[in-house]
Image 1 (tube, rainbow, N blue to C red):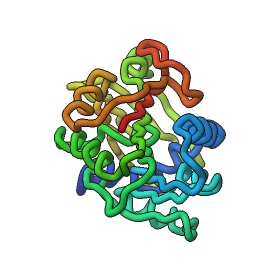
Image 2: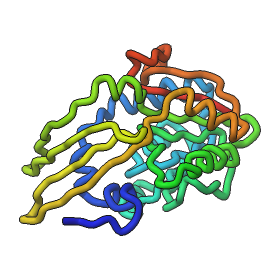
Image 3: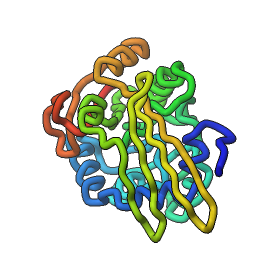
Length: 243
């Protein structure tokens, strides 16, 4: 059994099993989203973008391939070590805590694929939005791509299994104390492992409160990667543009 030494996300995200479990994430959909988002925001080629909580850098690498100067940051040492093999003059990766502002300012800061709401301390949610504000230049845009919690809760699958590369992951999901939990158990190489994901079930109203506290202005809200209108009952995503 692996025991958490730090926050759950710092240990789970740093394992190869996390990337194995989620390796089937839709690359076409991710690229379509980046195309739609940069077009909608009218971000000129050559602009500087910060990919906040970039993981192994799939969004960062694509943004760089279409002409942007991208910095990807993440708390996971192993993810950043993997991403660094793709670095070039306009693509850089660094270990960084997103609760703290970065050392530069950017034309856009993207926080994608529900990379928010994991913190053990509630105040870190506000600190992250304040950090994003500090990381933006005068004309820059902040983007948070979060799950639509209301839709997720309404359609929650309590239990299932998923087999990837010969490893069967047993997944249990539930809502508790305002958080959506996922318990993950599996056996690999003769050892039993257990991890838990926990994400705050933020609603649009919750984010609006955080934005007000951080003194940033919510400009637009979308419900999917095609940038269709947000509907709290049916939309899969909660995508917020602010500055």
